[in-house]
Image 1 (spheres, rainbow, N blue to C red):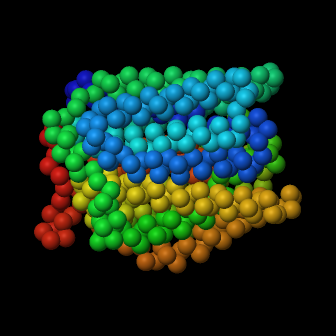
Image 2: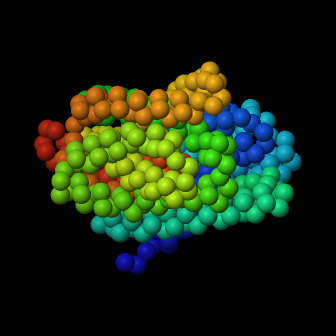
Image 3: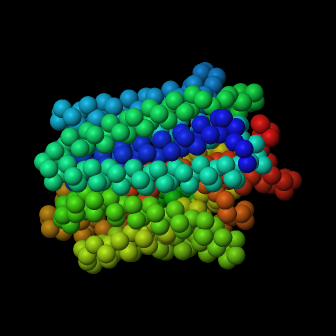
Length: 448
């Protein structure tokens, strides 16, 4: 189909913002280790800023109504996010980045990321006609995924060359500068988008006041409860995979990149097949595949340090995490009215970020308390046990009845432990069903 200029710009924005992720935030914990911070500091740098960012994005709806424009808000967030990476690159070049400064910069990064992500979902929904969404977002997502993978490989290669030549910190400054340039380019492409005539109706609907009510009224609360509990358990270990890989396992940066990329790549390939599987066998089956499949993952890392074995573990990790996130996303948003989903997504981000930080703090305390030779063993074992215990809550999670195929996700970060931190593109979710009428309910579609 012939794309409109803003649609071509949106695809270019997706490519550029994905490159930012591959060059930038993915390697921040590794940078923390390279400048002398310990495993706990590196783990907290990867998680605590997400809480600050999630709190900041709770103020997005009222601020957005004051600004009165999706376009200005998203471009402003993208520009500020680029600047945070530029300051990080400059700090890395001068080798003068403290733990507090790194946390502050990443808090700005995540605040802009989460705020822009939820607002962008409404903005792009108001622009792309309903009939064009499936093909458009599938193309945009595939191009972005390729860009992220290539940037991840490029950054890992550059860092390994820098390490071998004695210019490791300079290499970090270079990849962060590439991340800055990528997000800057993304902001330029965003400026080429239109502002839909009906955008103000969507802005008016972006309220947090109804989010908790919507979650409690539908079937979303059991899903949210499970997600919070499982995120706490997962993140007892997840933030400490990078220190484990670059520490006790003594992996090179290109090996680290390959293992991280494998989890992301298997996730990308698995997601469409899981959607088809959910259609044929039921989403509940996919939900249990993911919930049970993530249980042994941390413990599997303790069996062997063979690189090819770890690649296989990462391939499995990507598949089961894709299954869990697809099924829980459909369950969570199934009965949320379409025009309330942005506010609910903000609540979703907040709950997940708090759980991630809580798990990271628990893991940090355990690691500090444990004898040095058993720190990672305790973290990974405790994380697997916590995931097992969460299965009790999974039994109460309702299986969605909406179609699973075609749902697209936007990658906010790449993680060695799970492949990615992703959020759904709201425009690709099936329309919510109105309990009173049985029909799809939502705000009037703009541009259709």
